[in-house]
Length: 592
Image (cartoon, rainbow, N blue to C red; front, side):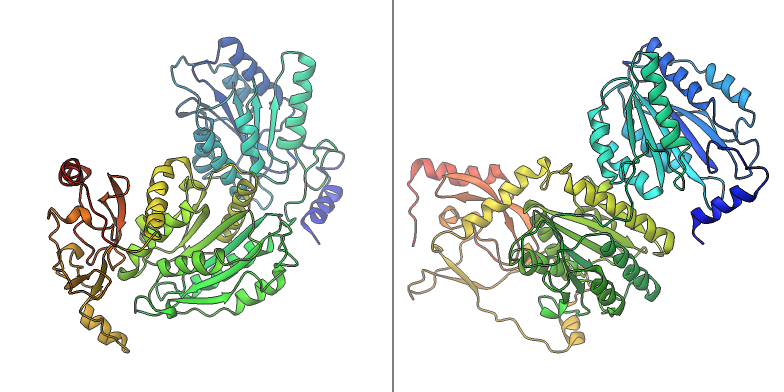
């Protein structure tokens, strides 16, 4: 017997419910939020308050903690959210209505922050609710127009979807930011209405709020509530790479929870029946961090399957259930690099969006940290969306915050035990994220990364042009290690890292024609400006300055450490002080 069948049976056979159409149909926690920002006039506020009272006319108010009727809370908001009436303040309807009638408009110079108010309601007011199998959480917000925090409204809509909160916004003026944000819901149950001046229009608007939000019965929905099935697979034009942290820091029960979570995620997406054909549907690949302790080894990434293998969720779920945890340390940077270079860049018939869903439970290995920072930045600059789910408490919070795309509130989730309720929250939140992605609400890369991405991509472009003026190599060959313990003992991976710039690396310079090697120039030598930009032989990337002989200017570049040449400066002023002064008195000669 389904939930609706059981509910109908009880209603038909219980004497206290026969012949009644109760509102709310289920026990409900109901929150109203009144806009008190700077542009709300007394007449406008009176319309809000009158509408609130009209809505409550036919609503049964709970007179105890028993799971029947509605408990009501009221808040006001502008830049901050303030409690006016709490759930437990009034258990008599007449007293509640009188308290609402006595609410006065507060004068303020604060602008409207609807998104933050919505997030406050979801995270704090609904934190403690009555316990009931069919308990509903409903939030109705009044607004006098567009808000200054449109991104926060999108975040709130995603969180409401994950928390199973049914929202409605009653707008005094047009609110396109709310209309766009509510597209994060694919069922049509997030409702935005405009409250007109005519009483007839107001009655129609408030009736819809009652029937389709507060009094909504999903077993017997009103005809005007045309909602779609929440279980229908989403059609998203994307290439999705799942990255799973299989390191030893993940407990067995957490790993099993991750498998269940990813199984629910892949079930809600409409996968391409022919992955090799550009049909506007999704494809998926799965990578797992492997257990190797050695840097720069192919063992650091285990390819579970690529974008071409599966075309429905049944095969995907079977593979996920049989996946074995790899153990060892986390090498998230190398795994992400593999996703970029081997999965996305080599994919035929690439989809519109590229998404990485990374499940992280441990801090990445010491030797992998610089690569993770660099590759995650590169991925963002290439338009890849990075969604991160953390598990447990062994991860590095700074690493995952820098890894996730922005805004981080829409791209980063923290789970603990990966229990069923946590998996449900994450599954619903990620579904809302996919809707936001398909509607193009966020930019990849975001505008604030434009300059940094131009520097990074410009550097890579310049490195790929022409023949190097000077070739750099190490005279000291790297030793090979077959035993991981011998490698760790020799290199001291888990010891404090010596600053790479302080290591004296023995190098020689050649003109490329077999001539006698030239002595290595000192960093601030007058000859330093002659050399081409050199990022060094390691991957501990930091931003430095070098003199570009082609453009006759100082530019930034990513220096990886270990060697390089003298054309590398800590500041732009140092670079210009040496090289621009020389350039005005002497023409630089390009050495081929």
